[in-house]
Every structure is written in structure tokens, then in C-alpha cells.
Image 1 (cartoon, rainbow over the protein chains, first blue to last red):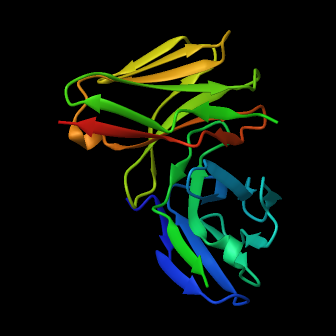
Image 2 (cartoon, rainbow over the protein chains, first blue to last red; image 1 turned 30 degrees about the vertical axis):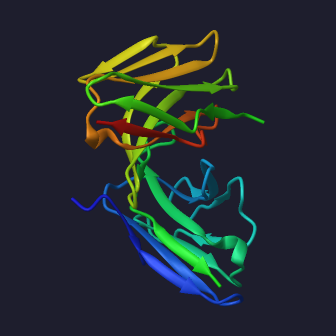
Image 3 (cartoon, each protein chain N blue to C red; image 1 turned 45 degrees about the horizontal axis):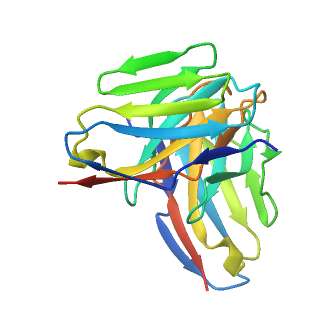
Length: 112
Length: 110
């Protein structure tokens, strides 16, 4: 049982490059989330989805876009990467909004 | 806006009990969670408590909730070296979005 899988695990980008982070869950969860984690801070919500075909902005959405074309996948895109987006990105999913969230192992992204 | 606060570090001796504290501001919280993060890993759900409960016990873990003071604690009995990690407190607001504390790093002394 894989749970929540994130790819890639590590990535180094140059300023201005674009990339997409992939999150896949095999638990038939409705809700999916993208967070970023920076040193000394809690997780901050970037975007989330309450079901296939839906997306919504979180606390820090600027510079990111997301898509949820399939229920099991939630993609996070950086159109023009900036050094301020250097962070660890976590994807999570939950069956419903009031259920515990299950996390992937994270993607460590460095923007030079 | 809503806020969740935790001490950044806690140091305990192996075999002692660890008590990690958390305060929050949102009085409409529905669920409160404790997650554990080991180095280089994702967040693992440890336990959670519904806001109308005062206490929840699960093996070595005891969660206490004082809703009046908006205070949540996690007690780990007989702390072991494998308990070394960062522990995050989070509350679910009325929209079920999680508000996270900055995490408490638990350091185990031999």
C-alpha cells in the first residue's frame, strides 16, 4: 500500500525555469493538499483540492499553479522558479476535509 | 488570524516522560492533531482529538485538551531514542483547513 507518493524527491532548478511536482495517492481520498515547509516554520498551505476537477488557493498560492484532472493525482507547477521558492514541498490527502491528512515523503527543491 | 504556538525544543532523558505543549487561538477548532516528522521524512500522524474531548490515550501517548485555555499537550511515556523527531501540533479550523505550529524538536539525552 503506497499511500501518498511524491515525485521527484529532489530537484535543483535555475531561476526562471519551470517544473511540475507530481503527487499520487491510492487511498481514494477526495481531498488533496500541497504545502511548503521552511526552516523554523510550520507547514503553509499552497493550494488544495476538494475533489477531481477542483482547486482552491491556500495561504501562499502566488507563483504556483495546480491541477487535479484525475482523483488520484494532484500536480503542483512552478511557471518561473524564484530562489524564494526553495523549500521542501509536501503533498497530503484526506478522505474528507474533517479526516486526518496523510503525507508523502516530500520533494526537496532548490532554486539557484 | 488563527495561530498555533509551540516551544521549539524539548530535551528529556531516556526513560522519562516527555510533555510537548501547544496553544492555539481559534475557538472554533474541530480537531486537533499531533504529527511526528523524522529527519528527511514526511509527517506521520500520531494521534488526534476531537474538540469535545478532554483526553485521549493510545499506548505510550496521552493527549490532553484544555479547551477553555486553548491548550493542547502530548505526553510520551518512557521516552526512547526512537522518539527523537520534530512534533507538530495542528488545529483544523471551521473550514477544516489545518493551522500548523512551527514544531517542537524532541532531543533525547542518554
